[in-house]
Image 1 (tube, rainbow, N blue to C red):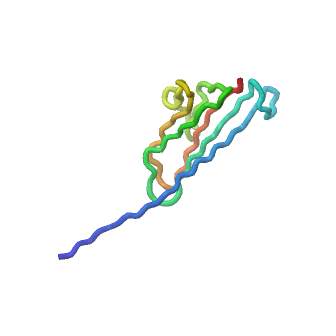
Image 2: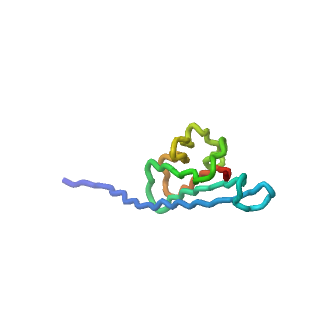
Image 3: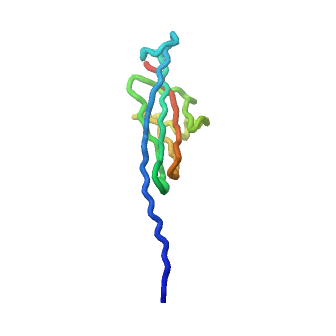
Length: 114
């Protein structure tokens, strides 16, 4: 008797990078009351295989408030009811699902400084 088998070996890394862009009322970049901060969170998977059930969770910073309707995923608007959790602590909580190696997803949202 003989048997054949196939073994699939996979290994992946998930990297998360967050950046911020500040825009004040005078057209500058001063982080002052009323200024808008737009955050981008990039989630990248490298290696081989698939990262399962990825969720982005990011708290809304103290002394700021979320800008309704500002949440996007890869440039496409996401309803607040899906990705913004207003209960304390307020946060972005957006399921990305399964991400194959070589994939990058970008979440953006904005807050105003109180």
